[in-house]
Image (cartoon, rainbow, N blue to C red; front, side, top):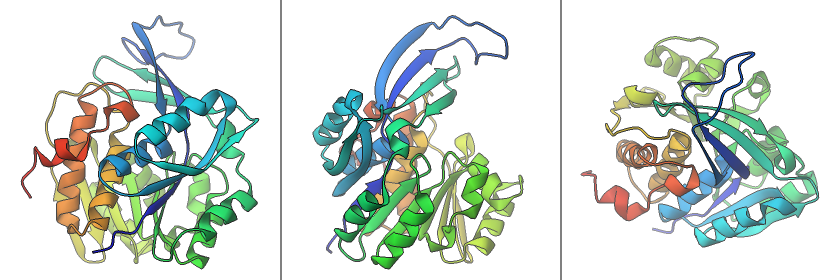
Length: 299
């Protein structure tokens, strides 16, 4: 089977990570217990996950001159960076708080991630083979245009609309073949905050041609397309850092689908991969290699 490549048009961030006893409250000055800096951004994380899972992936996007080390991390991770542009605008960055339970909250500065031009978009998409995949997140600009142009070029679309703000509701998500959401994003898109099965039903009604893949933290993950719905339990581990769990899940799920695994198998693979990620600190650095994942799973 010929495996199609993936063009990941996505963000690259410099992650500034602070270990805190609890998330900072309004008006509070809080001393952190530790500080680390990592490569991050949902786009970068998902490209690394795809590459480590064995898929040929091109990363398209923009960094500032302060972010050239991000390019090198992608290259070292096996990602093609021919469509990654260096801008005069500073790189995007994230301020991440991680509390003692391993949960996180994040502030994003978009920077160069939101300075991509339509000419740059057109150049990337027109060079991709028909029936290749486009992967998107919501940390770059002009997502609706990218989706519409991708369909004109004959690409399949997978999207993780995160962060899921109100603007996402106007995106042409009906063009997507796979939609990745967590419970918060699902509630926003479904316009109802309810039990997983209720939100899945609503999302399937809104986007009947898409696979809906919903992660739900410790409750596992859910899959739905038309009348097919099932649940995949999470793999229990000691949680250290959940920062890139969803990115790992999405990257490994898409890679498994491209490699011919069934949706049930792909969900198990993605769940195993994300469980390894949350047991480690950091974003991209915590994403496992394929042999680690397949060494721990029976399909």
